Length: 258
Length: 54
Image 1 (cartoon, each protein chain N blue to C red):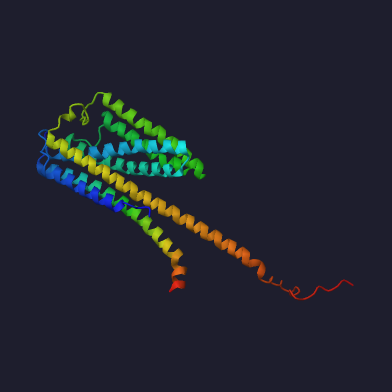
Image 2 (image 1 turned 60 degrees about the horizontal axis):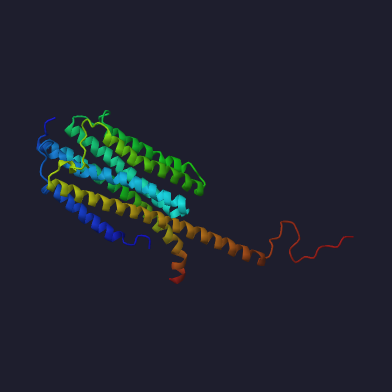
């Protein structure tokens, strides 16, 4: 019921992702400067872009929740942030591996792009703590949405600030010159980006399906428990009262006072 | 830094892809476990009806 279209989406994502992997390995030329290790680019950069776009999308969903009051938008925003944070772990891990291979260091603190992404990641790492520290569901959804809107607005501002900063070692991919990529590299990058986007959408839909199924089950359990209580309450008066130990039986008339 | 030889670079590239695949697999396994739990609880709710019909 909730996972309608999920299988098709997953199949398309798997197909495009497999195609992207094939292009990375057999079609895209070896980089003249970095050599084979540059292949990490086709995984790392699409993952970073999709994660950041997911954060922004979560902010938009949260804004819709604040405007309409529909809890479904808060759930959508929460799942998008959850998934983007997980992709963020992947971005940091693959970025560190790439940095070690091409710069000789796992991490470079002086590089604005790396530190900016880490700040965004740590900002969103706070989101679950904020969300689940509030017990009241209404307040929880409202506060989480306010956070998501503020943080979602911070992401593009942060990205623009980093791009305008003086880059030290990190290359800039998205530029008016297309990052000076040859057409084969650009095509491979775009297919990888499409594959990563489809993977994100598939996983988002999967988690939404799990959350909605779980919520529907809880509602069903609460409804059943309520029905059982009401049925018990209706049945209870018809049953004869249990006599107290040592007291008169229900049918015994009370003895008249002398 | 000069480009790494193919053998050494291949290890780094493979490591990056393995990290990514593991991350996605762990995520899907956790979500799959949650869906399986929902299915189990749903089956336990349906169990009295199933017994009555059987």
